[in-house]
Length: 140
Image 1 (cartoon, rainbow, N blue to C red):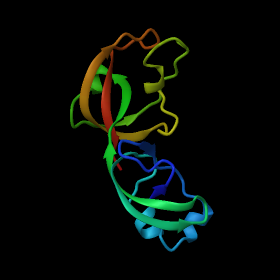
Image 2: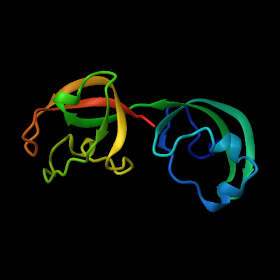
Image 3: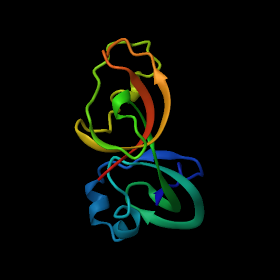
């Protein structure tokens, strides 16, 4: 279930930490318990089912699918299906178009990730290694 203001097909969100109100809510088993913290989800279907919510007034029932995140990683780790421990890349190149994919705020350092798809080579001035952009999912 999502806030009715954002419940639309194609909407993407990172499932964060639930509030205290959410943890006490009777709808928690169908609203939160099926989602994994820090994973990226996309709304694939919006229903007409609405439920009261103490935080948002009401929430709309939606169907979601987990989606991969974009990450810049060393080329040596860019093998589809490979699971590894992701280390944040500290980057001072403010104008680099890939900068946000080097250290996603919601992705903890040393998170276990799995490469889903290798996308493209990245011209990185910060790293001494060859770097690539990949689609990855958190491997819990």
